[in-house]
Image (cartoon, rainbow, N blue to C red; front, side, top):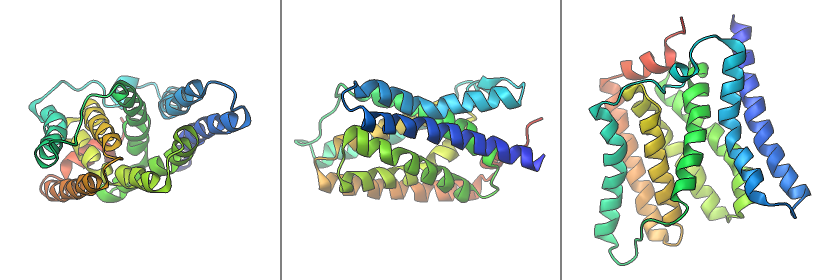
Length: 244
């Protein structure tokens, strides 16, 4: 059983990294081809990997396994309240510099949904790491490693912005994990990550605002630390309890 579980993890990582990074390699080999198609398949890889591995290893409901069947509760509002609080702070602190509603917001939310399905919806549950923080940070590190060549090749971002994305994946990991455990649903985490990722892209032209963004994320992690200390069973019930 243990070796079977390890094969599930390795299979997911092989498909997720292999498919995504092969798109990067193809674009480097054929820069004359439209990059948006390669980017689409690269971002699709974690979700595709989750579906392939799940369907080949279990007969359980895919939607149930990916936290996609829970009914909405009041806790879902946190996925809106938290990012809106961030936006409110920026609107008050930088009224003349902060703009909203750019055309790429839909694409960021779509990409976020694909990443959440693969990494936190499927793979984090398969990890079954007893420690809330170790489980969260492991997913954050893996997502950062997975995204690095995609960000560099497809978007050509500089070192500072790449570092900002790496910190983002690490600092959003624990709040996302706790929110999934609290709501038993992946959708609030998708919304939260989509809002924050969109907000991050808006701040790249303002370094002072970027510093405030990460300071607020650190504060959010502090709140999550306290919440998890009081309600550790949310994480255990969502990510550790074995499948029947």
